Length: 364
Ligand SMILES: [Zn+2]
Ligand SMILES: [Zn+2]
Image (cartoon, rainbow, N blue to C red; front, side, top):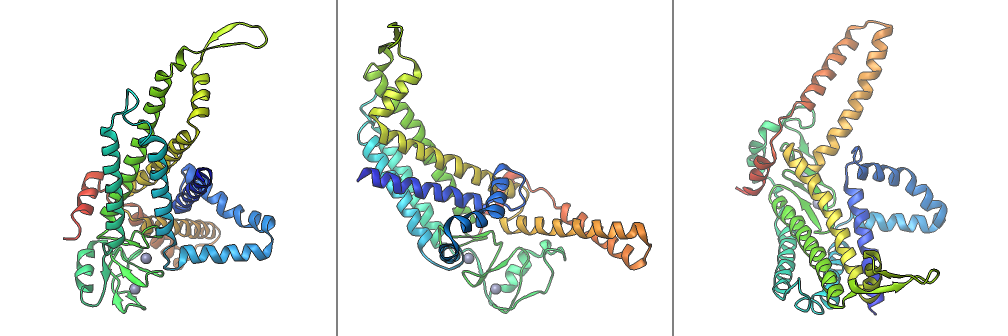
């Protein structure tokens, strides 16, 4: 039974790692962005060849269902992964070893469980706090609040959302999945089944941070437990005989590690799962902190990259044309593009602390 649970947990963890990869910026120069581009450019054709057309189409339909409809699969997956991981960690580590090894006392069972509850609380708050839905009544308020962000490139004044029949405030976006316009739209999160926007972004950050903290806590406490077990069982004093030469050697660190991993396989596996969570979530969290510093949302970052790409392409083409023939319209258009390019790249840096202060003071 435990093996099956561990297998499911491993599959789900790998799945969520892939999800994080998919979430990164398509034009990002980071390793995650590069892996994402590889997956997107080569993944579909490889899958099609491997699975055959029929299964591939079914898989595509399932993908569209998971990512582009308003369903509860993300929330269910979150509970499965998170509760299963905590349950297994408790069974093989917390209840079994905490308090029984010299380095991890029972205090950590209580602290760990409390942090687990905090994680659940922030998940609940992210799911249930409205992201800042724009309607006819509050439309003006939001337009005024983000007035300074109308740059006539990314955000043009007096544009309407044809579905909601409202004036689009700068930084807002109509979410196709939730079918509403959201203020300071960041992204639609399938785990919490709603958009992350102006009012719930702070809970989203706390949600990430609490899970990072818990997984790191799990890794550190786990390693200290294993170290304590090795000491208690006097594994560092073990000796072994070389089968060929007959010499007696003292146990190396690697040998102790292999003995421990034989005796505590499940516990080690679950520590490894915590480590995957820690690395993946930390990368995602740092990505968000960097955007907060630059006063950007995920949506703006993606749009900015797309804009830059098309600007650069058009500028390059016009410059090539200009070399061949001088034309007033051409020169005018090129000058226009250069001004756009400048204003797109001249946004002020907000700084991390000021960015966080603004986010945590919402809603006013
Ligand atoms: Zn709308
Ligand atoms: Zn949404």
